[in-house]
Length: 253
Image 1 (cartoon, helix red, strand yellow):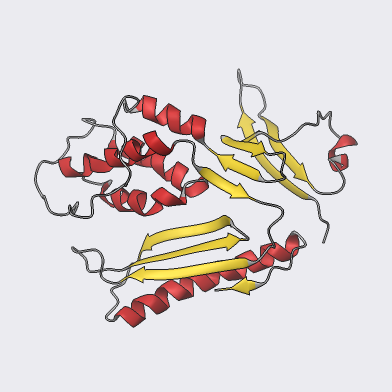
Image 2 (tube, rainbow, N blue to C red):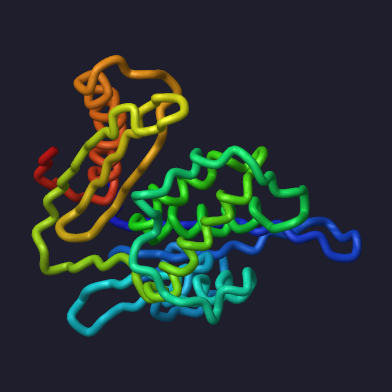
């Protein structure tokens, strides 16, 4: 396999009724330094520092820090949480979102869907630390109650951690480690379990998930096996990807 990786996202624009044109947002890594494009496109080379809203800091020690600090600040401003006080946890373990079944939010009264959508994007790209909490509040999109607007806790957490992100250190041996777990019958309403996994290449997180299952597990062991099965599926994909990028990591799960 060629060691060159090309990431392309095409943005289709239609201006004044003209035929749509595609403007690719492209990054190239590997040994050929972008030569693959030079024969067909005008290119300007430079260090990658932004890509699709992600901020990428390439540090002198060879490590890479990927974060969304600017995005965090924008959504805090959008939902009037710029001056909020800081909280250090995203959820209140003593307070269930299902404990109050009154006080429904009227449609358009508060931008609940928009707030959850903004948090989902963040949790899926660079912030595994808020994944469980965002997964929890996203369950109530159809008919959110007043109590569910407690998702503001997540914004308060982001206020103090907006500069968090993912670090990848080139000096660390590329060992692929995976962890799997399940919260047996953790949903007090449906008694469904939540499966979780996280995979790390060296010390850098490369994949994560927190997902409530569609079926009810009857035993803790069953819930753990379901979570492990989902983790193995992700591991299979990551292993194939490692071969594409010419890496042969030792796998531990």
